[in-house]
Length: 315
Length: 115
Image 1 (cartoon, each protein chain N blue to C red):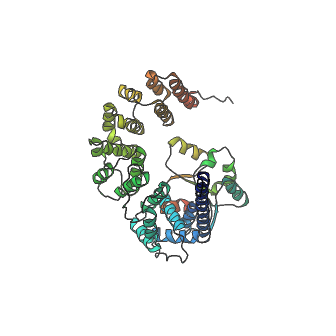
Image 2 (cartoon, chains in turn cyan, red):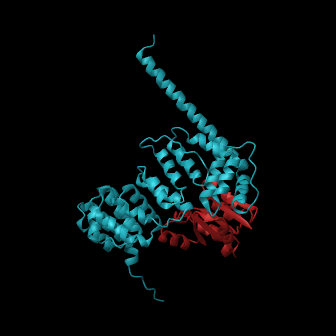
């Protein structure tokens, strides 16, 4: 008869064994990937680049192909470069067997890192069936779902498609970033006028990305509206457009943020090159003296070098 | 033409190697700043391509080692789009060209070929 303590020890032992086994397998995979890259990486990259940019014939699949390494390599080529035909990447991936590999990886409940990694490859045009479980807060499935919208030619349809899902600001920004790689981020004014908060969030992410001055009035209107859910997005969009922050509406909107977010926003203003005077004026109504002093001193230290008169060298 | 590539990720190094392969076969890759310094002190390169510019802002004298070859050595930095001041700092630090990622393959090759 197994006692309670023995059963606990058995469970702990099993968990440890599983952990060690997983680590071992991970190490074996990593070594195999590294070895394959050192042997075939250079030649394979030359073939891929030749096919994508120089109209060379499509490379033949390697006999001993490490799909993970090949996927990394293709991802690197597509991340570093632009101007390639996505259809060629899709054809290449099909020929190399990456489609099936990605299907296997993204099936079921995937780990976040795996899914994000795969979706980065997916943005290049590899066609994978995105039948993922629609679990509420699963970032992996959300980002993959967001990615599928980047394949829609029509901007409004893509925004509707993305807005149907509860995306975080980071996921929305990521989706917009991916979309910008294939389609120009031209007209998001309809998204900014939408009654749907999520659609407006996506529109603001596009404004932050492009800093399109045509969206100035929409962004100011959103800051004036002071919608709690979109407060931070609209403030950062305002900064991205390099608009003045010395406004009543901006001060009111900043006051609605928490302490950490206010500090982060002031730091962002300094980094974006706003004058110490503008930051000081914005901080007039700052309730926390520590944050006010921090923001002002940060702005001044950042600008001190510029404010100091240049020393004249007398020869 | 002799090119040195600095990139931390191995796949980035191979990708860049594949990208510049039509221009020259003499490509040396390194994954660290120390390797970059060592290579520049040993050999003369026509061009240095770096993914990221941390080595210019870390306070090391890497730029001196890279510029040892004189003005003929073209230094290209590939990085994510960043703030204007940072780009100016990089250019002042001795970089010939700053290209934001993703970069067009033919543009990169043209930059390397230009004398």
